[in-house]
Length: 417
Image (cartoon, rainbow, N blue to C red; front, side):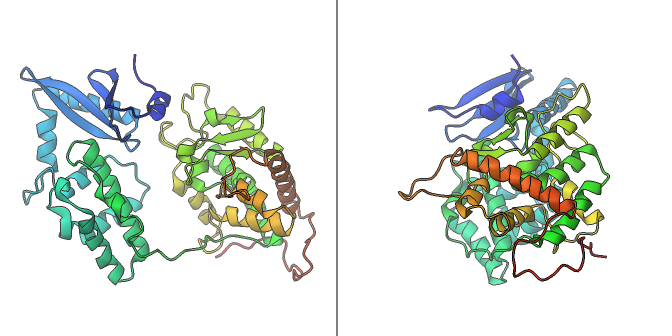
């Protein structure tokens, strides 16, 4: 029986490696440590061979099937897909296929990249990583080798980039482990060893009058139904942008007005519940009605080119920029700071209730972490009052609650030119 996206996502590791068959020789290989990779078993000249097609979730079920079909076409004309890949991954300088550089370039091809970001990642590897460790076997690399790369970046004060590069190196080593070219991922041993990256505050609108102008702009935007709905929903739910973009219909109960985000998609790796105000439910119902009758995807906000991927992170940013709001004025993540500030200062909700809804770690007096349903009834009330408050701001019918506010000079947030 073929695999499904849900079955692949929910598959758990056990005390020994597992193979979940999909069909046509394709199967999902799950290591004891939990790494998942796509593998294809085939025969050339009567000899059984194995080809690794990529690491899940970087390579989805649909992409794995496409890769299998591409390899089968080569097989039919007598070309060994495995040998063909080795020839393609070997560099002109003769870099071996088990080197860190060769594995990295293979990993890069299997990624789903945001436009423009791929060039930045490749530049990091070309300039900062490959000159030092690129030609060495991935299996021979130690934590100190990666730390040496990071230290050189820190010397030129590129602290945030050093963290990002090490994250990418860790993903490459995970891929190397999953494809049997390394025993473990030594980058994991660097936790706490790098110079902390300076914190950056996301641009956020916390002035009620300015927020009213921003909301009017969001509601007047004329783009695709998916982007329009995302723009309207962001201020109402104030989750992290990736949590919104990757929302799945299976997580949303419109009748109960609750959105349950699984732990695997949350930054803190804890499940989270988002109460949906009436306004949010209406936005989602309207969006659902615009979906094609034959829509078989999982995502609430599917990508423009493929239902198998969520909306690109640049879609909402591009909409904001097209309306004239630059990165120093509004960001998708900034709506979290907006809600945190105004729920406290304007609507008077307790900070711990707000922090719960922001999915931040909040502990009881005994030091125990609250579960996802803690204070749910109060959070339901807060989210509805927040939605009503935003409607009032958008209609210019709200009066400032704080006496220390200066009088407003304009009822709209003026975009940058």
